[in-house]
Image (cartoon, rainbow, N blue to C red; front, side):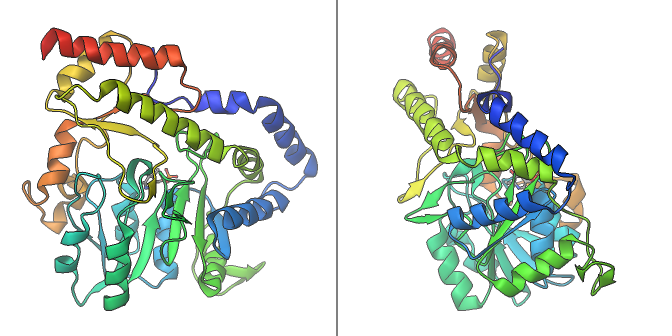
Length: 368
Ligand SMILES: *Cc1c(COP(=O)(O)O)cnc(C)c1O
């Protein structure tokens, strides 16, 4: 079976370094909030180009803690995409605020044209998602945030290392959230997350929130959370981050081959990059009317694909109370029915990719 992603190959490529790094942590006697976390925060801040980086337990917590640290709470509205992983809207609801959805366009990201009409007196923030590794169209979002005095919180969980023009994703708003879940571009073999920001005050508040609202041990200023990155994961990530630009380049190379070899198939729409984007292809998502047939055909050829995402967030049962209906966001609904992600990961072999391409071409020959 050719899997849709395979983080194990990334770990295998660094097996010696990672094993040594884990040994070092085990021997250090310091397993929570030690030197590795500090070093990783420094490296991430330096790489992304922000003053601060704050490690937390996972990407979802990164979003929740950031919203809370910005003072977003009950009665507030946060504008975001209905076409993303559930955690994006879940985090907004977790702090008591209301997710307000705006439809996407053919980039799979927020349609910048549709944001302004969704802004109300209660809007406090816009939370663009850099879905599948492609930066959202930030220019309009930044202008609107300026005019209406709104925070921008990037959900950059799928886009570590991506650029928009010459700026890394993670430095395009007031704060940005990353996930190191095993399948993400930069990952560890467990949960992990990071927040980047240029706001030192916000960073201090986040450091307090992640450790029980405490700056000095056993003295608590507020009700916080227990959401920290383990030293073992920080040590693994310190090895992986050395490779991330190379690994993202590799994903882009694989994406380019898919585009070249599938370009002439007119039953498939290929992913497009926006101007100035350095897309890091967390996923390579095509759009086709024949989605379900193609998916079944490929699985019979031992090729795994994925549907991201089969149900847009405005139609999720958990958000019923927001009273959205089918038809509210036609693009998100359309892509939920027609999008299919093909295998893409660092160390996908040429033989494997050729097999995927040939299978799609055979499907076209057989049935289209
Ligand atoms: C993975 C992901 C998250 C959540 O990250 P976790 O580390 O799994 O909590 C949030 N938003 C998006 C867009 C994601 O892809």
